[in-house]
Length: 405
Figure: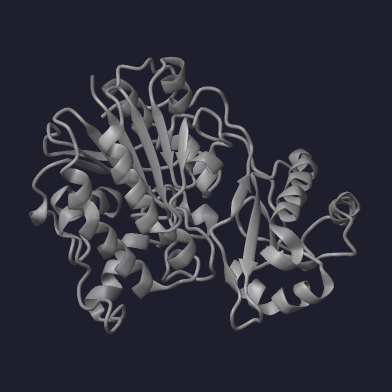
């Protein structure tokens, strides 16, 4: 019996979403624009990287073809002449958002057809009754922030006042999120988690996708840094995902990175965290060695999004892609003869784009394994084609949307 792996490089869009204009993202292209910047020398970082984007492992598996399928062009450094094996293409999203939750659910075969609740780009941005109820439940004397903001910027801006007053920092973004930042020691980690649980209850009627605890440490604005104790309080997905089908058939499921948070720990099996990209890769490699026949491993590499995409750090994103590519042989040598791997994204976060939010893009669909032949799969109409393909490979019943490739 075969095994299957889904690897999500969080925010790795390849441009070309048919409805990008309606999101204000027409022309965005995360991977393409990073490659362009590298070719121009705009992403050179002495001691870290320079010149054209170098991803020989994924280029040989068809990453350039993913870009061509989405936009009709091959970014410099990812030309399809390097493509040796693997099925490659792109996929557009049918879910109504451009967030990680919607993207991952659709990858797993359950598109989000309803509208998440979003907070307006005003200051304050949260309804007064929501904040009053949160303060009452959490025994708070008020909050700080109450606006759209970058998580690292708002901690630098308000962290010292938070420590001095005990008021948590509440903020949001273009995603359907209510985020609460608090100092692990001065405020308390468990108190932060409890406050997020209160917020989850209060935000349910507003259809907010995730409540995110953002703990940080440090003694001043210059030294504050977020810790690995982030926790997401999400909405339970419908009981029809690929993960549910694997569980129903008593298959082993291993979730690595933030997969557990995105699926609200429902049918996510053994959950491994890992922290940064390297930590997630370490956990994935170790889990690959012991994943049973018929098993499914689902991993998310979040640094591309949180550390580089949102921060509009082109050079950092490029270096992270090259670092990921350099580690691929560690994983590839562990694959068995009939294993299937699908490497993809969940949305875009073009670091050359205006603002700091996600971008509406197609995602790469790169399917490979020792027995997977070289083939173009074109531009798919839904991320759910991934779920349909993986279900077929694992001989699981697939009754949801999506067409196997």
